[in-house]
Length: 499
Image 1 (tube, rainbow, N blue to C red):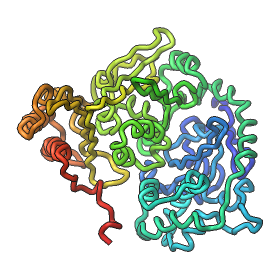
Image 2 (image 1 turned 60 degrees about the vertical axis):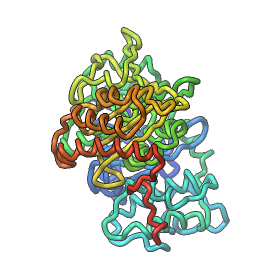
Image 3 (image 1 turned 45 degrees about the vertical axis):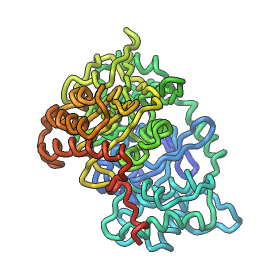
Image 4 (image 1 turned 180 degrees about the vertical axis):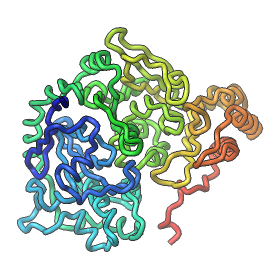
């Protein structure tokens, strides 16, 4: 006999949708296409890379509606319980999306802009682009914020197109604001979502998909079900489901615990809950370190950052995860917790014992990341080297953080990714810099130490020799930038400037 599951409930087209007996490892895309017949949402890559499956979620936060474009192909269906959901088929059909004027346009501005700007050819990628545009419209146009070319490029970086070319689609993003306005009736929608939330405790009791609303309940569930697959945004576990065809009879979702969804701004540090999305986590970090903006937008496409969490990326421990080299360079610490032993804190680089292995006990969870605030003498640079500029995995990630006083390096912290079995701290290079004059000779010695410190493998992304060469080159680049030389790279190249 199969175990009965808590019904999956969400708001679609202004009405509750209730689905019963949805397995815990079923993806949202499977539910949409196969259970609900919503074939407008496409399956392209099945790994959150192309954006053809993009949908928009609405979540209540502090009495307001928060909109997120996400990849439905790697998102577990039960993770959207209690939320509002829009697919490309809903924009012209949802009674809660209402025109500002008396005359109702036939299409939403996200759709009409694509028509007027000739943003579609074969049309397979178009539903995903339209949904990303819808999320952009709600988060910017409806708030009176302009959509610049740069913003459009950044927020559409998770959507790929093979035949139209991106210029007309970027035109459509900027053209939306000039069309007759439409807006979601958030007051009515939030009321409907509140009714669904009254039954939230039933989701915690689901024996297959456990999603506790508090940290004590989450830790108790972890202790009771140590074999359950822990998930957050599922940007990695989702791949195990779609690509490796793994099946999970029991899921423990950490993203409902309120304590793990908070960013706390303290005088000397920033505490980021493990379930804070990458989008929100990077927003907190770039507010403190503005130079991280480009690095943050290149971490992944926006739909991945909207689903993935900082804690999930850290706990996953992939050697090519970009957040860990950054956090290591920022001297961050992680807080682990269990219901039996309470909390313990350790340096992030000490979390890992081997490839995707860590020191966490079976009843422990990573609950937050603590990042010290910067000092006045701190110089920080983060570099990501990948085959593709947008929406790609790093071949090498290097983050350098130096405290320089009077042309002397007082302290050095360097995080590296893609060059070892785990995200690593470059201690030998740090030692070669600390206490030394900030000079070309010092940098040369540190670059040699950095190369000698790691023996990276060769794989599909780069050879080991290339990675070692890049490590030294990036440290030299850091030196040149510190001397006022403008970086020559695709990061600061603007197509409009060459027109």
